Image 1 (cartoon, rainbow, N blue to C red):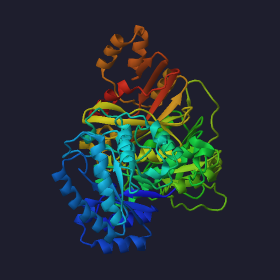
Image 2: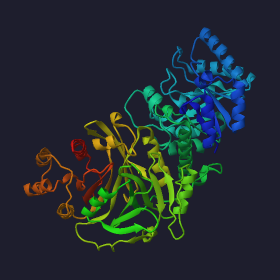
Image 3: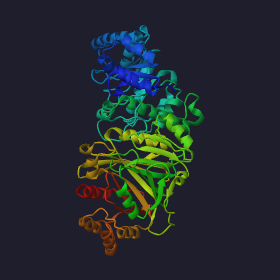
Image 4: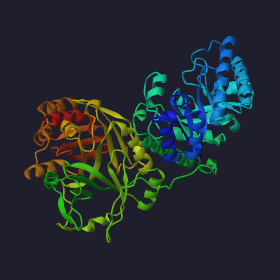
Length: 608
């Protein structure tokens, strides 16, 4: 289907926004009136630029406070409208958004509103313009799309139809099922936006917190399914008011926006099956990753990281035959230590490899979703790994079978399985810059098929840390994404000061007997992150633990959490540069991450 986006979604001037939309691959745009008013270019110049860029000018918006008014006020409405219709003629546009009245409505009567829309339709027709009437969620009288459709039906004018906006419908909890009762030819336009689940007034929610599809909590695939079943064949258009998007690079935001539409169209098509129709495109279907392939730590000197790995029982598997890279493994956990092109860099997580069933198909899907590729030189005899760049700059690699391990030489053969040893990577925690958190949720959801879990907020010494976990259905891959408190924002890819204050990224390693592993690690010289004695006094009050068990936890600096499904026991290593390790043992069916212990960890890292 054709794609479109409102210019209000992007930062910059109108010309810059048009270039960004065209570069991303959009078919058209909605022209947001304030963008045109502020532009130094004439309407004719904007029209010519759009033509050169291959962009259709789909919708002029918004026209406010048009209906439900007395006759003297409506005379002013007609005067305003005629000026806008003349402007649209200069722009070469034929569709205008008319919002339900918020400010001047005084007559709560559908017949009056319909009659006024009919008269507006007569005037619009004389300029070759159609009107798409939209029920704003905060409209004074009309705040429900079903009432907006009833008014349009009463107006009974070929130039008057409805605009359906997912935010205005879903934010009010309206059932979108009735969309299927609207004739397709009367649905003039469709606007899409996601949003987080928030408890606040709907106007503020709309103006500041909308998101692109796949980044929030709305069921947009279900919503779009109703629209497509109604027979709508117009463009899928985004109208997203968001403070972050208005401050970031418009080209990057435009790519993010188009990724969201392609993901939404694909998900809706799969839900509808053959009912989706021939115009709805699909992406290559690939399952979510089956597990972590490797995690890469990069620095000028990774020696201190490798000391930690040795203390945790990892085996040194050798050096890469051509590159300044070393490999450490234990069980299915593989840690790559990379010192290439890292002059002056402190240790940080630079790449995460995932084991996918069909790497080529996964890479093809990623390309369709506009994921930037990683430029990587592959020599003869080396495993081909498809690489992508995540929103925060982390490199993501797609492989299968870990055949690349054979490229490392000079190490020891891995030790066999033993009780109290690392088995696999449990999760990888990635700190996100403020401008890329929502984009990261969309990226890992759309490109890798990971499912977003509910947002959690953890109190730390510098403020609340927002966390959202992306994971596969079977929990083979768990990827917590953390957003720093405002005062700790900086370069999440190497800000040493931010890491020193407890916001380093970390790799969580699973084991089957954490007590045995912790003892052996400390015998090898590991000094785990110190845990205050007050924490263990509190454990006695919170959980029904035997005194000797609490004593063992205290002696080994282990933290504990449990719920009705099981328990979670874990410890942390010291932070090296911007990286630390967590070792975890999941008991029973425990599915969390010890969130109650995070403030203790953050405080200990901040003071240690």
